[in-house]
Length: 385
Ligand SMILES: Cc1cc2nc3c(=O)[nH]c(=O)nc-3n(C[C@H](O)[C@H](O)[C@H](O)COP(=O)(O)OP(=O)(O)OC[C@H]3O[C@@H](n4cnc5c(N)ncnc54)[C@H](O)[C@@H]3O)c2cc1C
Image 1 (cartoon, rainbow, N blue to C red):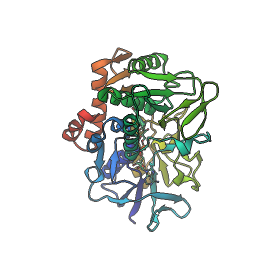
Image 2: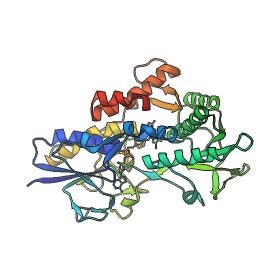
Image 3: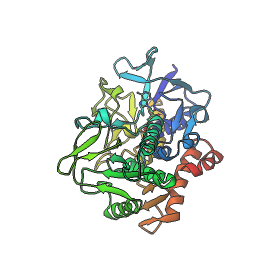
Image 4: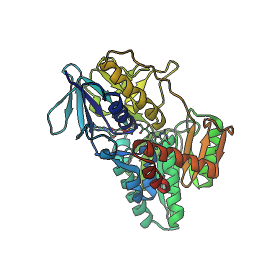
């Protein structure tokens, strides 16, 4: 019997797993179907670049046809639900898709934590369209502002996406000599919460050097159409407000019976979920790593995809599954044209910046594109990364 294998999502997790599955299933009687809402892979961890320069689009989007073999059927559709009992995936405007084995790699969506007004008034950054909209809104606000009355751009949440977005807005301000004030606000005591204090300090310094105003240790309690309200501090009027303060699972998994936490599917370290026929990886999943889950990062999704692809093939062939252990290879953060590297494998200096960090950050992103396509494609993107 031909096994129907379906992969949902074309991010790091989905795209990486498709390529691994194509190799692994070569000698198996199986058909591979790949479903995603867009017909391209977005290098999401560089999406903030488009806030400054929308022309990076071609370099950070890779058509699925350049990633998958012709034997893989690609379906461009929005997933609306997964029925594990019937073994079907509901798609918008189409028939349900049957599966024998399913790999959920749908990524995450922005979490609002019930903060009044946040969902209605804040922009988000989870797609290329989001980045383009932020670019439009920032440039429009700058055009309507003056030196005496600058535009106020506020980024809420100081994790990787918030910090890097604030860095791009600051760089755009400098390149265009635009009348813009940039704020980065964080509820917790320090930016990059939970990270090493040396890294936090280095990133803070870079942001301050870039004239980003950092407000920490004061949660946002409400946002209305022009003002952000804090628990303690004075309200802050804004022209553009971008919220990057957290992630949650996809709404498409609302009704799904798989065990989950806020729609992020819980799974073992071999990516198997509460249903033997379903695997989950990337931001869509909470992957048990003993001490805690793997982090929701591109780095983790990229690593996981290799092993998940292997394990789906092993499950089909009744072979024991492989256990995955997340290997933290370090952190790379950009602040506009500058970058900071921390705890990077094989490099003896703990935290460094300037040219080597910038080179490393570009190299890692280019290598991802090269892994998916080819080195010429990866190197062509170099200036956009
Ligand atoms: C601005 C920014 C900067 C970041 N910087 C870094 C960084 O420096 N380092 C790092 O490691 N991580 C970084 N991250 C986090 C990283 O991008 C994510 O952890 C990573 O993208 C997760 O990969 P994924 O494949 O699970 O999900 P995604 O890359 O989000 O892919 C999900 C896929 O599913 C598709 N999809 C979603 N919902 C549906 C649906 N209902 N139907 C059909 N298709 C759907 C999407 O279109 C997409 O193709 C950053 C994130 C952002 C937003």
